[in-house]
Amino acid sequence: MATPQSELTPDEQLGLDAPPPSPDARNQVALKRLYAPIAVALLGVAAVAFMTKEVPPVPTFAAQVMLDGEALVSPARAQPMSKLDLTLTPEGDLGGPINAFVYISKDGQTQRAMNAHAQVDAQGSVHLVGPVRDLLGVSEGQVQVVLLVVRPNGFPETPAAALGEGPWHAERFTLQISAGG
Image (cartoon, helix red, strand yellow):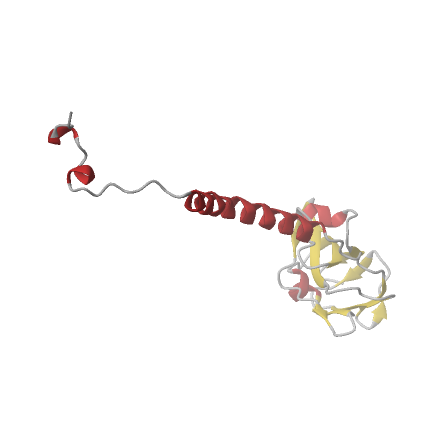
């Protein structure tokens, strides 16, 4: 007995029944469904490999810290316009790129000195030169200065962490800044 026309799907009514897919077509569909999970897995493995590749440690540096042309002995007295001249020279192979940043700690608060732009030359020496007030943003009081040499993206998690130990080289000294000298 024939199926009444009202019970047929629109495609069946028009005689557009699709033939069942061949086994090869089913396999192609199944294979295409695996592409995305395989790509995600490969990207995950690549990301883990990239993130865990060993970065060489920051080398040690020899420091020369001058204040108004004389060797700085910490703690040192300085005026706001005293010239600070700091040079760090690597004592070994750099092993990769480095960056340098200045942090200051005053009255229990640690922050990055945004006006202190340490320069790194082609040999990896770090230079910071300028008036104390301009570099540190401080005109008066006792301040601990930390010149931090890091690998790219090797910043301390918090500014206060710059006062401690980490995968960086830190040159630290204390200045007592006063307008009267």
